[in-house]
Length: 118
Image 1 (cartoon, rainbow, N blue to C red):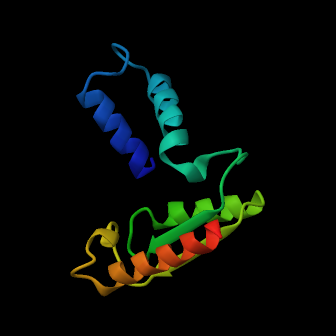
Image 2 (cartoon, helix red, strand yellow; image 1 turned 180 degrees about the vertical axis):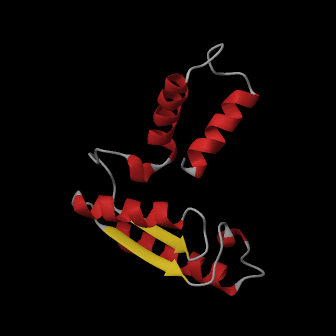
């Protein structure tokens, strides 16, 4: 099972938001509904989607989801700008004062956003 689906199932079970005595089908239906919003790469239709700017961290557990999303968007004709940061982990973006690539990512994103709106 996909780790995000498992996390969703663990959360819903812990917080008792599933039907009483859920069946496996209940769990699958809830997970599928959740994942279509939680994992954009699982979307089936890309209408009215803005061009995407995607930054990936090489060692992020969600790296493949980001890469797959970029591929799906490109196949749908959506413009995609993507950059991967070697050696980085999930949420490195928030460590700008400690990790040079976090600062570099912020600069890169700023440039990409300016290009996209001009």
